[in-house]
Length: 150
Image (tube, rainbow, N blue to C red; front, top):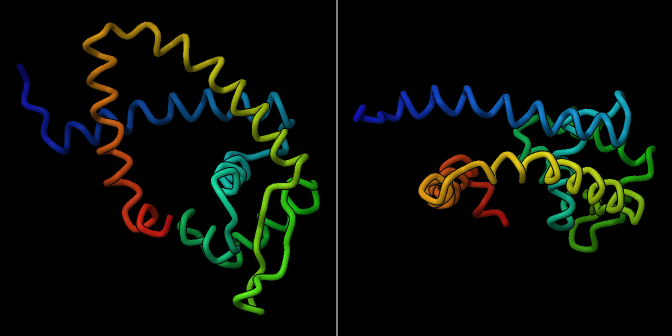
């Protein structure tokens, strides 16, 4: 059996991630139209987990504050995100999903799961166990400081 080095694992991940991203992106476009991007959906995903500031989102997405501010503005204009003053810091605004944004996120999430679950059902018991064991470790190493911030 071949030894799986970190380099080989990296190559395999780089081959698999675009395939998964393509499925998610297709469902995002189907649900919300061609003008909705994966970056917008990822912001909705973060906000579905809880309230954040623009700077908190920028750190999590590893983008500039300006880029995140522009992205948030688009989502506010669509009615998917609401801003409210941060009582602990007047310079910040808290971002939450609106009811409309939450429904949109849930619809896209359900459509993505409808596509992915049957694919994962093709795994045998051993493969499913291997994925189950690997995912928490991958989340830990890739999330880094983001997990600490949660």
